[in-house]
Image (cartoon, each protein chain N blue to C red):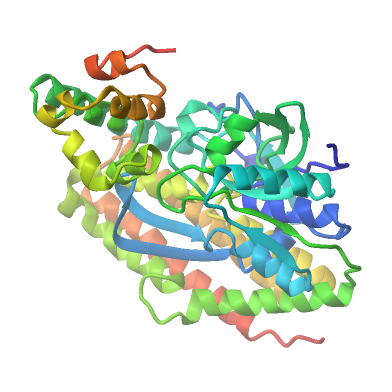
Length: 135
Length: 338
């Protein structure tokens, strides 16, 4: 890639920092060139986020239908899976799996709920009611 | 607790940490491409069945941690590396390092990394940054992919050092124990070893999913994605491939351009003209990876989507596989003068 061909399509990262790219100058020597982003990458990231939004919406539907506890919603929203959520909360994976069931979730102690709430950066009330505060 | 430390931005985090830590102990000639090449950083692997963020597990570089380890070893510089079970112990050790004047590399997760834009904060645990001081409750941070230095509070730093999930860092800290004069001869030898090791990892690992064989394997897989996964999911898979290839820190073209730059710099130490020719082959390979990414983007943007377009996409990888095979075979055949 030639230095002047390094793309400069402003990405969300580009607003914070430019990225170093390696490209060749006129004499064919490699130099570094800063890039603000590349449309191909921006779209790839958009596609990934669209997929996450779809999963979150599906999870919300399941919670509203009582097929899963609100944990599922916050787990998907936090881009987590059971293993990651278990890691952050300190529960075992089988425990998290149980807590995803509505009936089990409703009987959880405040203390246990708090462990989840802290990982999701929300209050226990919000966790129970699937409230979301966008910021 | 302030250490005289110079921050230089890099394309890739681990290269950058390696370069900056080594320069800081006096190895002024260390550059990002040299760190990457001496550390035999170029790689390819497609791990079938394993899913990352519900997509394929693909990497264009060697395992996290190896670049620093191999580069220091090749230069004969001893390394200190520690992991911790306790967050308290991890911070005590970090403070001791800073007090004795050692900036340190830390493996961190990016999910809770506050200065990253939200769009980039996935559960990715193999990011690296340098801590080089502390002012009140703020640690001074040199993140190689950022243009400027930044800070993290002790709570923020603890959270990213103890990120959870795959490749959990467990507070991992590492730094070169002490500097020593590094002669050009040492660098020459390190370059030669780095190239030989990279030839081995790309050509001779007897599994079909790694190295140039892995690229061919992936190319053939891609051709089947549309039929097997449906157009939507196949598009998601391609988007993931492109993100692994081009996202933060590859220098473009799945690290192929950095490797081409490394071979040019290697030529300054070993005046073997073949190095320059082979460097051009990696530039060409990087360009092909970029063209493949444009093709993939056409698919995941929904502009194109026929089986024919997936075949074209797969064929790009078959072509790249052949090209890189020739390039590494040429590297294997180099007659080193010293």
